[in-house]
Length: 82
Image (cartoon, rainbow, N blue to C red):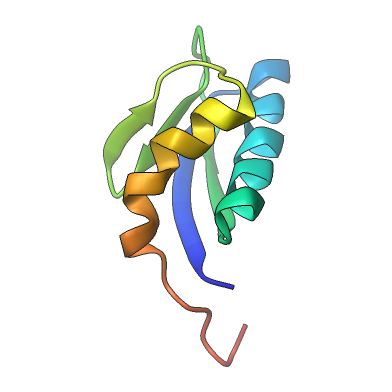
């Protein structure tokens, strides 16, 4: 399954919910979402893909799917080492 690398900035319950929703959205899109956490105090969790802000607050999973779909082209295949 291709891997889409994202950076999640935030901490607390909303950030943990975002991580789970990212994973669910990835499965629906046919990719494994690899989350790189950056623990920072934020009003809302933020998600970056390829250094660009994609999500700026906690959203429903279906909305996350729509926002991640344009980024599927940069998803990479896992190497043999993983």
